[in-house]
Length: 116
Length: 111
Image 1 (cartoon, rainbow over the protein chains, first blue to last red):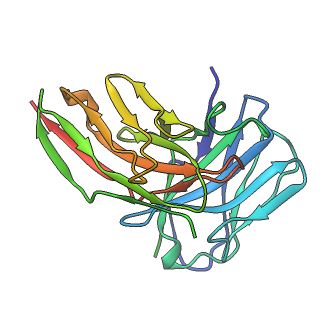
Image 2: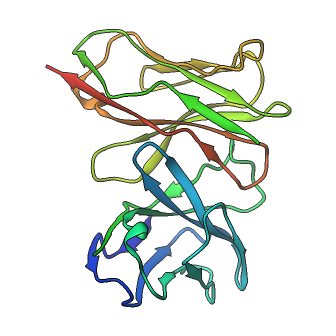
């Protein structure tokens, strides 16, 4: 089954404790992206990647890192989490180069992060 | 910059009622327009799309028409079901990899 898998689904941590949220897709997609979803703000893009070893900042990259060492994986790293990073995070992927109208974004089921 | 404005929720309707969720956009040029739906506990999935003016997207009984003159893409359904309860996001794109989302509208259908 074609899917984007995020882990964990729920995570509670404390300020300053490094964490990683994993994302893996089995569709051989070149493009992957991380979003955060906050009430009243919709989805905002954190980072995206066009292919292996190619990553770029989205709209809200501060406090986050990503890596793309393999095509299928795109982990999101919070080196020193803070309470304002409490949010619902989504990973997404698609074929690169095909317009979004023809090849939609495929989303994972989300990771709810709480930083105390 | 480009932006999408959706009607604020939450929206609560009885089963079989008519639904309209308003969406307008601000953009330079003519973007592609999308509605994504997020069911409880799941990620977003594409509901329908329109890539040029006067196009009508449709899926699962939902429709939306790309209106260039009013820069709108309102989501409509003639008779909603309990299973339509979800959060709906309007979004736009200019043929690159970036989607600009609205803030989402939570819809609850009561039996």
